[in-house]
Image 1 (cartoon, rainbow, N blue to C red):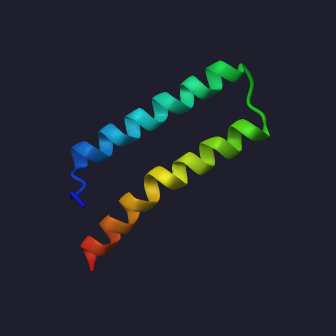
Image 2 (tube, rainbow, N blue to C red):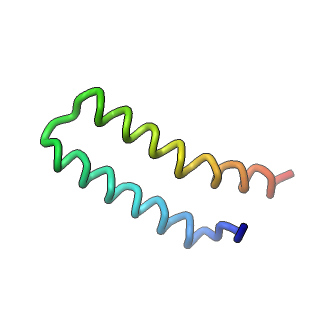
Image 3 (cartoon, rainbow, N blue to C red):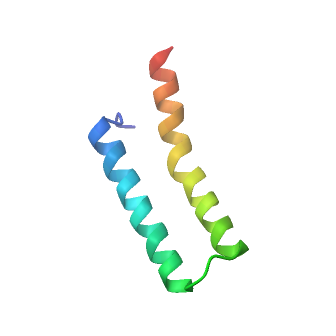
Length: 58
């Protein structure tokens, strides 16, 4: 697995924010389903980054 550089982390975060905006814009309202999708996608995206950064600090 390739290392996450600050540039890659920034790009991934920016893409995730754009996708969350598109999701909210498509539903036109924030309901429980939208919140759960955003939380789930955030976990899927940011947990591997957190694990690698935490392992790097050890």
